[in-house]
Length: 215
Image (cartoon, rainbow, N blue to C red; front, side, top):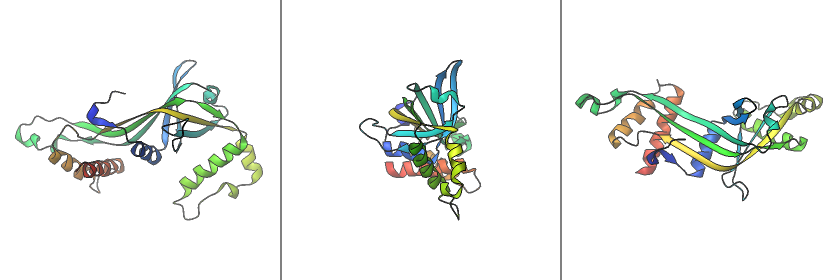
């Protein structure tokens, strides 16, 4: 990924936070007919000696040929918040007019080799964690035990788990770094207005946090 130095984000906790907040990743690999992508909800596990950047975990349908690519090099793309930036938010627009629109965003690229996890116990543990996380905000969180055991057993036979111990992470935070502090603060403020789309507000919050950390 082309990433100018000023846009690079290399802090592991920051990268993991974006992946956790936007867990639907696009897993890209080389298939029989060329590049192939699968969109999967991932879990990111902390780093270990064998996976210094953490480990991604997910599951796929057994009918999906992805799991037959055991050992394959993969790229998983996590798209964070993004927004269109109008020139009207820049001070120079009123002075010289020498401004144009742009798009700001945060994204993480995760690299590693695919590892198949086809054990029942692994799948149950993973699905229980995934469910607890995504059901946490529900008034009455659903649990695996809420479904009949025979039904869960039937579904377990139709899926396969995957792990990707990460060998490399790339983060790109394109957030007005080339502009003045005044312009960056204005953009963050405009993006954070309640009338803006959710992704814009999320980017505004991320930009404001970045500006606060840098001050």
